[in-house]
Image 1 (cartoon, one colour):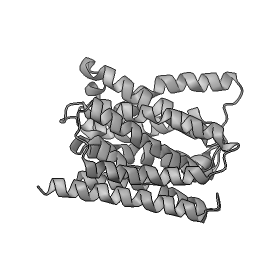
Image 2 (spheres, one colour):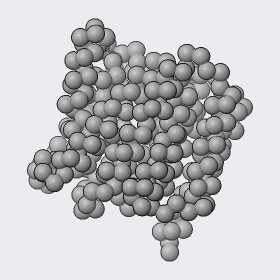
Image 3 (cartoon, rainbow, N blue to C red):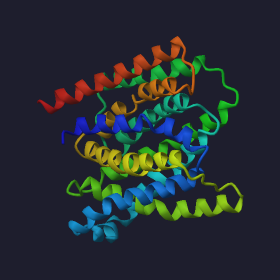
Image 4 (cartoon, rainbow, N blue to C red):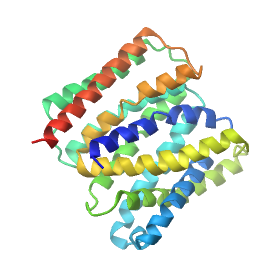
Length: 292
């Protein structure tokens, strides 16, 4: 699969994330959702792992440290925090604030991966971040502050995990990395679930809504989308793929409006237009580089 196409497919799945997370807040506690989602993703990968004799790679000593970082910082910590944050803020606002991950991406890519950040790429990234800033400057923060700070403070872990995955040998299949991510997230998630249970805040409401939330989280978000993500960053610069991926709030906002979760304003659409323009610009830069 073309890595740029993989990046946009990941974009399409993640665009639903904040909306599904908002509905999930009423039927399942955050840590439990991430835990069950990881189990579902691992179950999805299991037939392929068995058929291709890849289970041993998940426990190989040379990769164990990387798996722990990817599982803990790439799944257990950020996804639990992001779901928890949706108790305090709207899906559209959460998606927009996650664009601060782009700043972390530029830093990690330049410092740890030694990627060259071109002037055109910086301008495109400024469009993406500028769109978010435009919305944030107009937003009247009250109860949102708790959720917003949780989002901004947690998304750096995603880039730390992606940076670690980027340094893995290229022969490793994205499905192996996806499976390892889910497997090594489970221990911390189990601790978080036990802690939540001790606080009497662990809950689960069976029903069709819970089934939809679990199917999306396990099979699409932690399964297919992560395979596409690792396929994309395995062949393209992490900072560029992140920039494309982080334009997904336009899809989130459209879904939020369609479902009546929030009302939009002109400045939000202006900000999202800037964001999408920046993402397309990055795409064109990638296509041009691939055709050289």
